Image 1 (spheres, rainbow, N blue to C red):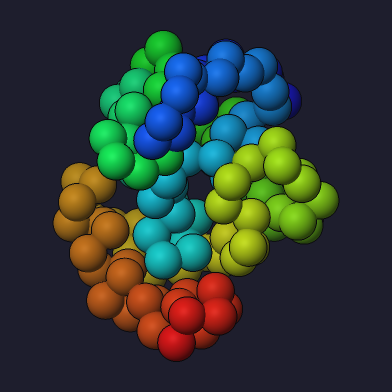
Image 2: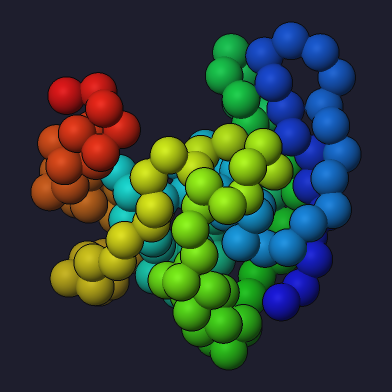
Length: 133
């Protein structure tokens, strides 16, 4: 699994430069998974090609834009399916809920449309897992 260099941004202070494995990065990107659902190949690459965001008044992560091959994506998926995100400790911020998969949304093109559709189905369940509802 490839290492990724990125900057982790907080609301206050200078960004922290990091070099880590891709599974750590995906658990450190705000909203990478829509309501806890791991994105399909084309949506994941849309995230990665974006270069991230500094987050403004919330945390963020930025990197040099890149994309995964289908083989790299499948390798990432296999790691994510077996990874206990809590084992990442403070290496990633969003480890409270393990990513799940719902392929019924894979046909949706475009990040915003995918996020809205997935959260329409999974928001309540996700909030319960976070302890917020």
